[in-house]
Image (cartoon, rainbow, N blue to C red; front, side, top):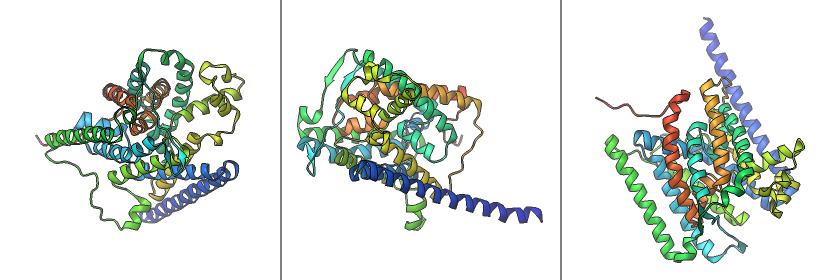
Length: 408
C-alpha cells in the first residue's frame, strides 16, 4: 500500500521539479537577454541568442568532440566523427566565400588564422589528454555544466585556473619556432581551397565509416528515423547528430556575420580568471599577455562587453533550458574521488593547453579549419594522440571507456 501511494507522490515531485527547472531556465535566459540588450545593444543581444541556440543544439544533439574521439579510438564507432566532418564541410562552404570577399552583409569579417607553431602542437596534445580526463572540451564543459553536471563544474573551475597559468606562460610558448600564418583561401584561391578541404573531409568520413563497418558489421546513421512527434522531439530531444552538425555550422557562420569573427569559447575563461585575480588585488594588466590595448580594455570593461563571454553565458543557459525541457536536469552531488582528481588534472590541462595553442576544439579546430587556417589542422593532428593517452589513463580514475559487447 505504501509503495503504491509513494509512486504517484514521487512522480508528482519529479514533474514539479521539471516544471520548476523549465521556468527557472527560461526566466534566466530572458533576464540576462534583457540586461545584455539594454547595456550592450542589439548586436550583442543577437550574439547572446546565438549562444543560447548553440547550447540547445549541443545538448539536444549530444554533439560532443570528447566522446566522439573516444568511441572511435576505443570501439570503432564513427557517428560522432562523421558528424564533425559534415559540420566542417557545411562550415567551409559558408565561411570561405565570405572570407574571400572580406565581408558578410556589409559587416567586415576575418577568420582565426594563426601560426602553425610548436606551441600549437604541444598545447593541443595537452588539451587532448585533458579532454578525456576532464570529461569534455570547451563547448562540452559548458553545455554539460548547463545540463546539470556537478562534476563538470569542477572541471570548469580548474579549466579557468589552467587558463590563467597558461596565459602567464603564453608569451614564451608563442615565441617557439613554427610556420607563419597560412590561409588556404588566400594561398590557393577560393575554389581550390574548397575542393581540397571537402576532399579531406570526405576521406575522413569514409575512412571512419570503414572502421565502423569492419568493427561492427554495420554503420550507425547520423540521421536516424524518430518515432517521436516532431514538436516533442524539437522541444525535448534528442536531435539527430546531423541536425546538430548543420546547426553548429550555421550558428558559427551567424557568429561570423554578427561579430566579424568566428565562434570561440576559451578566451572568456582567461578573462574570467583575470577579473577574479583583479578582484583580490593581483595586477593582471602588468602581465605581458595582457599588455595590448584589447586586453586592457577587456579587463577594464564589463564582462558583458566581451562577445565570447556573452555567448558562453548563453550557451550554458541554452543547455540548462534543453535539459529542463527533456526532464534531465537532475544534478548529482556525490562525485567519486577518482573523478574529482581527474577533473582537477583534466581541467588544468584543458586550460593550459588552450591558452598556448590559441583555443580549443571550437576556436582552434572548428573555427580554425573553417577559417582556412593551417593551424587548425595542426591542432587536431596533435590533439588526437593526446586523446588516445587520455583514454588510456581514464581507468586509473575509475572512469569508463564505452565499448560495445560483441558475441564470441
